[in-house]
Image 1 (tube, rainbow, N blue to C red):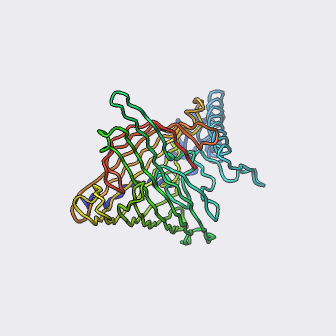
Image 2 (cartoon, rainbow, N blue to C red; image 1 turned 45 degrees about the horizontal axis):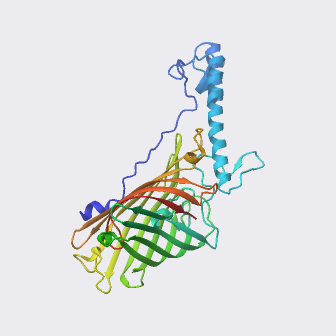
Image 3 (cartoon, rainbow, N blue to C red; image 1 turned 90 degrees about the horizontal axis):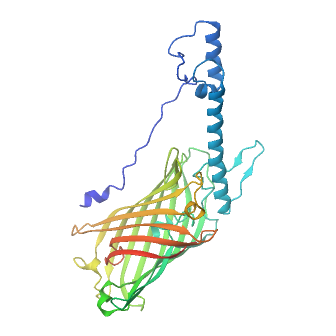
Length: 400
């Protein structure tokens, strides 16, 4: 069981062999054979000099006919529409897009561009669903992508039961960044210090449903350090002490959580950063988590049923999917985000396992993306207390 948890995720990297400058179009005999006539040599050199002819001169006559020009125009318009959608999305998030002296966009535009996702030096306020919803404190997910803290209320008249719930993390991350050296030189990116309050409360009014209540309030302070290799990859390490109480202030437990999260920015595959895939943007955040917890005041939380001081470790995978804006979707769907998180932890001493799966859909309600209608499903055991959850929920989400 423990051995399985030691494997965070298997990441396959695609290494592309260098491609010849001359990539023969369909029907071209070159460079499979050497040109013979003057005209063949001319066509060969046209293709060698022009990537456009390499791709679109399908009959290999050295010219672009009407059908070939139409294909070139269609591809160019499609690429431009995708980039325009990226500009509009990024401008809606408050980013400024400019052109440099060479007429290039600053920063370069691509559908997954985050445009310097770091928090400003000095830090910023974060309101999210969970620590996974923050990802890396010094370069957190944008709130438009985030799941967000959830607040909901429901009423079941058949059993005379009202349920209200609130779940989320509030944090303020103080950040400091070092100036990067020349490319290829490893360096310490910087650090973040983030005091946080996490909350998860589900209250049933019916006495018969009180066993389904969830009641914890967590106080923590996360320290994070990042190290980069200078070639697009980095590693982030976090340490987070926690003090868990209920909403009445009664101490339940304390814990220390350690995390390692890799970051990779080497297209075509990015880790803990956005990737393009046709009409969608997706981001995978892998985390290796280690937790030591200790019971207080005989709290009776299920996490301590077989061990009053469990030491647990395992992987956490968080996936976010959004439209790129390339297709003409209704505005509310265009700004929607799908998310899913899976956590598996094993107790090193007893071998007891726990998991938590959460998935949902956010539909932003305001233009800035700070509020959303949230549909979610959670099943498994809460990390902090071990309480069982099997919950379908519709509520309002707040994100910052």
